[in-house]
Image: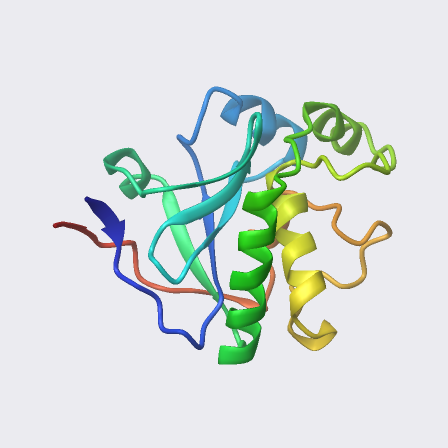
Length: 171
């Protein structure tokens, strides 16, 4: 089994792909004007939980991820924040919101988000952070629409601290 080394239960980890995640990479780079094409969380079990077409899913890290993913710690996150997010992850997997290509285009053309639960990857990551961490730990709090940001925007937030590249172990 491939997996990232388990994060400590006191830190919230966000995974951001700088390139090479999927076929939408070039389009997302064009829309967002920077590095960062996909965003997800790293669960306590070392797996990725992400909103990727068609809906939220959990999966193992793979060899391809090693060349393109960066892992960030949310500075100041605690064991309580981590536990809250883990509960939220389980709820999301029980009733997964869909991935919204429509919202991705709405973001690119500076239009407001739709009102339903579907969203694109970084919108889903920001939603999870907003619902489970206090405002002082949130990476982007002055957005006109609370969860409306790209992976690139997350990547440059001072609240996220880059940690070492993922280490894949084969069990």
